[in-house]
Image (tube, rainbow, N blue to C red; front, side, top):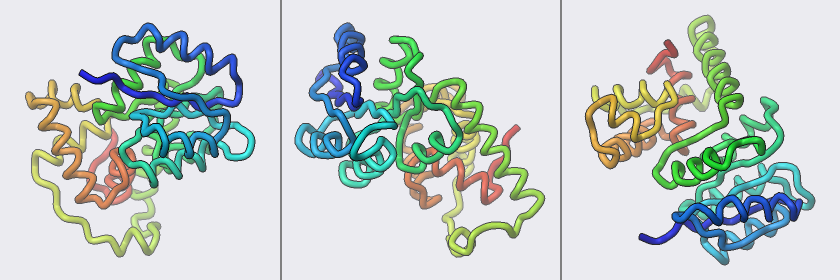
Length: 228
């Protein structure tokens, strides 16, 4: 089985060296390159075609948010995991909107870092516990907004005609809202991980979303599911 190819992006060399040391002990992972800013990250992504990019946020020339947006648009086969010291709301949501599949803080354990890399290659989205709470709070806010002001949606949202979900796709979507991974959804619904992945792909397509996080936000905005 081929190793997961990782590109490290951070303007501090000591951070990059520390990450390389941690990942050297993960047999499934290979660090294939390093970038000091977002511009280098975009260029090296095209050159090296990594499976995963570990992306810092605050960097010279081009920061992590625009670099993430460029990479997810130009290299859709590459997954971006943001790794930063910042957990402010605006950066979290900007990172998710840019297409990041994970959002970790730099105080994460080595095990959490490795699992995030492995997880995004399995189609999962992983965020730090402190960050997850803020994301769920935002989902809750959107749900309450939809309930109290159901017409306070954008014209673009109203113009979208969504293909109805099947009953099983609805089951999977509700578990996505709970933040479960494909593996956990499979265990809950007695499905294989591959089958769950296919359902998630169908849900994303039907909701005209960019990724699973966007699909959850769309479902909450349209009242297709509720946070329990």
